[in-house]
Length: 241
Image 1 (cartoon, rainbow, N blue to C red):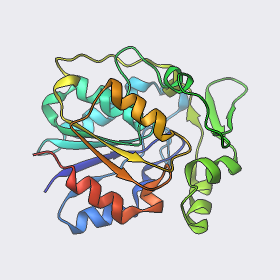
Image 2 (image 1 turned 90 degrees about the horizontal axis):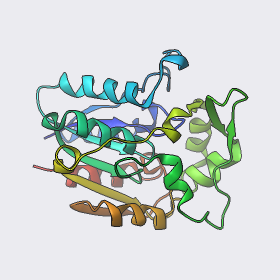
Image 3 (image 1 turned 60 degrees about the vertical axis):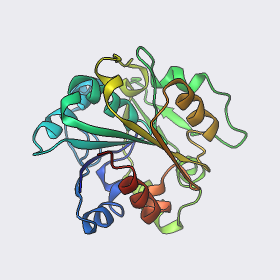
Image 4 (image 1 turned 180 degrees about the vertical axis):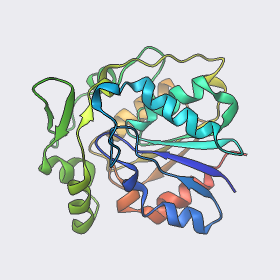
């Protein structure tokens, strides 16, 4: 059995794992699915948020556990788990990227997105705040880009729970080394119908930073809602001894 720390993606909170967590717990795993500071229901002021503050938050959580943890990063959460592995590799059993940004040293999320042609269907409509500090997404994009194989009920729930995303997550480069991050086992779960991070971009990232294990889910960007049982099964199978 393993201890999972599930890191949500942009605009989301720990709530997005609510259907996956009980399945893993029924299998005997320990699961933590926190709100990152300033996200979900967390009230940390925006001015205190940096990418590194999120990383340190997860580092502290990992250090508090009685065993090495498996970090699961969804989407933007991939940046965080990579940097955590660089800082405290001795506390990490493995990394699992769930249709997540798997980017090399010195790269940013925004640069990575711009390397890939936009898909033919509508990409996320991101609305930048007047002060350029946060972004939100339009209601139509929640459905069409993030939840295109999910149920109407869950799309409505997700839409009601999304919060503004600090723009630091888009523009802060990672600082990774082969000696630390590079020594932590990693796996990737591809989502074949993802319209937010298209499969072509997922595989482009994998070609540059290969993972020891790769699995596929025939879902949208949000399998924690569209296919929670299949996602839980994949996570359990990817537990790295």
